[in-house]
Image (cartoon, rainbow, N blue to C red; front, side):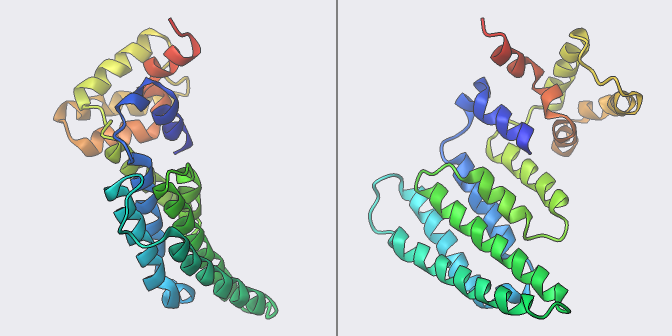
Length: 227
C-alpha cells in the first residue's frame, strides 16, 4: 500500500486523481474498521458512524460549506469513545488473564483513531495514510485488509490500467531490464500474462497489487530522471 500511495501522490499520476479521492478512501477504511465485530466497540458504533457521516457530508458540500454539524462537536463524540475505551483497557490490563479482552479493546481503539483521522481528512487534513494504518490494526488479519485497502484506493483514484495497458507496461519494464530477478516472481508474470488479454479488472488488480513499482515504472523513472 505504501508503494501505491507514493505513486499516486508523487508521480505525474497525481494530476489525474479526482479531488477528495484520498479523503473518501480514508472514510472507506474507517467505516470498515468500525464495522468489525468487536464487543468493545458495540456501544460506540453509532456515534462513530455519525462522525463518518458528517465527514462524507462535509466532502460533498466542499470547503467553507455550512449546514453540516460542527466538526468540533463530532470530534468530541469521537474523543468520548476514545476515553471510554482507554479506561476499559486500563481496567482490563490489571487482569492479565483477560488477554482476549485487551486485544479487542486495542483493536477498537484503532477503529476510533481511524475515524478521527478520516474526519480530519474531510477538513482538508492529510491523515489518509494514518487512517488506513489505524483501520488495518482493527482487523485480526491486517495484511489482508491492507491489500483490500490498496484495491479500493486504486479504484477510487480511477487509475487501474487496462489489461492491454499493463501488457505494454510489462514490455517496457522488460526492455529496461527491470523484470524481477527472482525466478518464481518472473515465472508468475509469464504464467499470467495471457490473463490480461481477458480485460478482467480483477486480473489487472492482481498485477498492480503484486508489484506496483513494476507496473508504474515509467512514471517512477520520470521522477528520478526528469526531462
